[in-house]
Length: 291
Ligand SMILES: [Zn+2]
Ligand SMILES: [Zn+2]
Image 1 (tube, helix red, strand yellow):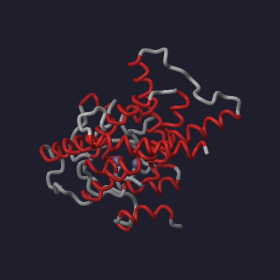
Image 2 (tube, rainbow, N blue to C red):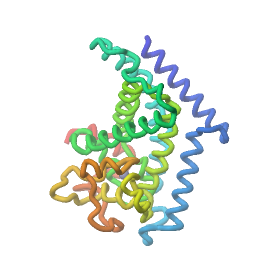
Image 3 (cartoon, protein in one colour):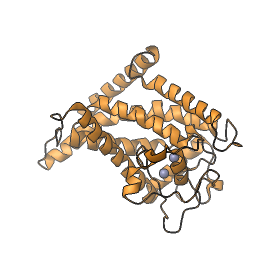
Image 4 (tube, helix red, strand yellow):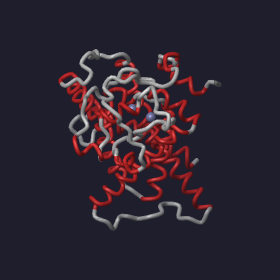
């Protein structure tokens, strides 16, 4: 009953949040218009400063990725976010309670100044993301889900949110349940981080030859992330490289960084990507099929 109530309340909350966002464009933070504005801005940058000049403006899979953006961002990612954060938090509390640990949270940073709490939380959040991404590449059954993201053959900003909905489940559990339990963070902080991560993620996939100069060691960027999508992997990196999501610093710390030359024209995908399903529904069911 407790879970059921938490789920229905979360969905009701989410539905009214989304409706409120759509009908109040000037209310801040506004996830709905944020995604639209960021997408238009980054698309405009691609058109003004294209890296691969011969790539079509509406590249292969542009519209499918645009659909993925809305499907994942609104219909799934935030719904999972709303439902899972509440329910897994309750479940997790019960689980750790049986081990004699506190059920609400473990560490309390509320004594620290606000900006410092935010920085600490952002670093932890992004490190968890980076670790989950490494796991998606290393665990075979998870890689089957992550392949959807890597099935893009021509890169553009909208490929950022091209991924199987199961990825949302994995990431959201790791990020919000674990982190919320361990660090008792504020949900509003999560939203600001989420918006910043969306902007950087769009740029990482955009047709832009940018790396932000010396900031490349801190921020993930298009020149680095294109190598993450390389079809051919170096012999000593069979699980890939450049796992960065928002911050590139983890790849430099753990030596998973790899930019041997300009990746502008490298082939994207994975082994046998030519035979991978191309439809949205094909992507949804593929990981569940027996090999
Ligand atoms: Zn990946
Ligand atoms: Zn990517």
